[in-house]
View (cartoon, rainbow, N blue to C red):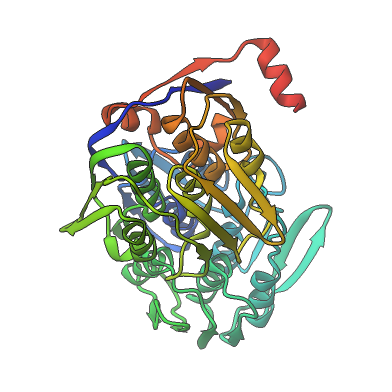
Length: 428
């Protein structure tokens, strides 16, 4: 196991290139199961979640070959092998195997997913959709069993807007007989990306990006080549880091429309943000003023940027209020930031951040992926050395984050943990 160390106070300057979208990649890989011939996905992020899903595709009989950020998947020999345990429990996005395998084989056995704990994240809307399509769904010894004689199109209304349920139902429905209508569907760019792949494979999908998606089932899907969209959350994270501790930073390979809500808040704070073709220019013109944010479903402010933004608010003048309406329990970074001298309190469902505060380096723990990003941003702005454990969470979603920040001028490095430190971390 490793830990991250950051010597704070170094100004960020230069250009950073954004990787492919993690939240697209984790759905695109399972979607390849539906094809009858070779699928090539280009520009995938080199992160642990992606490699875990590649291993799972091989477990069910697929051939997976990597060439840097490109992967070629041959699904012809895949079978409906049960995946009740093992790597399927490592990440929440493994639930996309449910929709993909149900759509391909009319059956699946998938262990209940793992990933970052952000409070209750039920999959009841996924199950509601599968049942509407004609599947029998049971929970047996901690695994979800899905069985269907055949899948038939249906009208499905999602009680809550859910990215995961929208994609999973879409995966199951593309080969179902007849027409499926998903109402109150999520609109995230990652859903459009998955639908683009499926359409390139021969699926008939309309309305993606709106709250009503219409799918006409087809009997078979073929292979294709698909290039993933840039990661809007990674882009947002570097934009926030640049606002907190940057001078002039260019963020390359970004679709600025995907993070319009963040850009608006940064400009409201006084950060200079200039948009050009697939690039953002961020300049910190201190002093900055505080703002309030409320996370909402897309195109609202992303819940995945709430934690990094908390660290930024410690560095600006005034008091900001953060309300996360998506994952109200996404607060484990708060105590860690307090260890670094942040003035933060939780009142009801909101986080109140006062600044500016001179953060101090400390030993802190990343409890989840975006909490890790928040602690890195805090460490960049802090006095002294910040030591972050739980690096495996960070590596699940940020490709080569140490190298990228170093290229911008940060003093950040990795170090192997001692056996004593590992034991202490595991018991904490």
